[in-house]
Length: 454
Image (cartoon, rainbow, N blue to C red; front, side):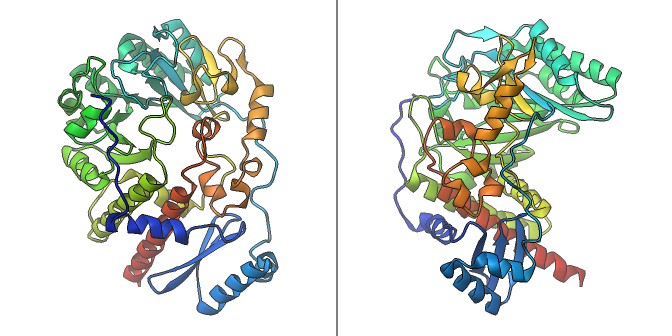
């Protein structure tokens, strides 16, 4: 069942929006990005991720300055280069704030694209012991301060294949956190096939953020995420998750859709999953799989971007009508744009966040488990500071090409380390196109909000 032929979406009217945004968001300058939408002129200043509406005169002046390579002089005149927010200095020896535990390096599904190679990371199937899990908690707490917020995530494979240790580790972490006066948040990513009503009660008690992997409606999901026996998993998952959906007070249950050339009908999935009662739904393209199967390339990413824009348009419509429409990708983008997020790394991997293998070794993140290129020490001895700082120096966005000439570099951070180090940069146009669209949405919603306040 997992070998269903790839369903390819050719260039059609449905992909024209994605193609257009990919073209419009192409890099003009490493210092700025300008574009026009809804009869307005927009300026994004890379330094500090500053977003402006500008008049026609300044828009043309910036266009001319870019063509002549004189945008920095114009920026200085406008007072936009008074301070540099990100320089070449990498982060050094950051404190540990979050760990993900590969608590079960095993899985009962047979997904062809799985970065964990169907759960065991290319080795023998194994469970993390409670002793190792407790050491991870102690390591995370070791240098924490009173009132600090820490996060513990349970990953796999399928983490519920080691339910007893997951439960006991959560209880241990909660108890130790109270003793030390820190706050623990918990998360779990599951395929949903082993969920029980008891899990629902437990996750609610400890306020878990639960992420469920679903790849579409029943037929599509079953072709991508079958049980290892070949049987479909969708009906079982939907049945199992119902007790969790019925609670969701302290707990939140969200869906993550891994997008391949076989499941590109995003708006359909978004509406269906929200109707079932999930807290939010997000999409992530499959850019690199161990088998090379189900990877996304330019044409498919173009179509996906059009589908994302369709979901975004629905988000705008619902928001203006005062309705909640929990499309996670755009909700997250609105928060990041609002904060003016600018960063030299895509995430905390290898910095404040590390992954722990079932055997107690530390890696840059959950995707790098058992990969020597991202080894970061071990629980017994702690983080290998030399290796960590070397990683942070090499992975700084200024060290990445073509990132160092891209206007979106401090929003993107250079892209997922695991995908970049194990493949090619196939998604840059997709990322830029989506960021430009999100900035347009932010400006539109901000303008409407301002008008309503007048």
